[in-house]
Length: 391
Image (cartoon, rainbow, N blue to C red; front, side, top):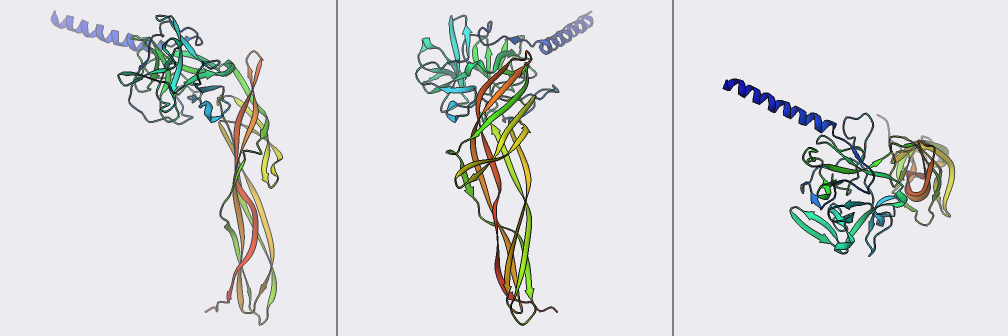
């Protein structure tokens, strides 16, 4: 009899665990926008004060076949042009700040992070003064030097999405550049989501702030304008690309024409700041800049499929000729020197997003062009030595 009861008890526990797992897997829903998040609105807490290894900027998450990336909003001080960004607190609430409604306290709370330690996040609410309230381990602290998360013109489709104990939702918003920590929300309020300690939805609802690209069908970047004032150009040390030896076995000086040729690789990249949906078509059209003595000159046109950073390479042919006076019984070494240069040119552009309803949004963005190439070549005689006697 006791053996039967024990077996029945084990079966009940096993079935209960199975139901818990199945419920956790199926329990994923979206908390619409950021206006009201049901009971996920109380106070700050931090899931884990410990650190974990950061994911790469384009790390894939979950088993979904689509590529999912985390989003890292830049600080407004970086002049990135990003619409989703951390805006420095300057005495008043910035426009389009992202907030949640704390029903228990009957107040609206805004997401903030510390200026000096941007991986510490919490909430700001006007009724408690100009402070960012955050958790430091088990201690509650506040700072008057902080940034507020804003979504300018509501350009990005941001929302709270609940998640299971198995994986974060796709495209979560990362708090800071160097740590694997994300903007989250629980019944206790704004939290720092640590990927290794996720919330169990049967115990407490947890949501992560995500950027949704579900309604975006294509993106296009046009009207690229390079900045002549902010460009930088650095000339590197010359390098020998190719050399040749000419000899004179006669008893009098002779002139010999030497022709040298070499191919080098020109590398160019265009980096765009702000939030791009990597998973959809993004067309980038721009002129190709070149730094001359008078400034930036645009030559040619490039049309690329852009990711966060897109680069291309091109083979450049160089050729020089030199008339060499070779003394009798001498051999002269002729070299082609290459003078490499690196350039960095900021630019402004227009980003246009087209949605499933055929409507479009166009906003200004910024980016930078980087080029590395051999700018010029020169041939010269390095030495003329006595001809070596064979044998």
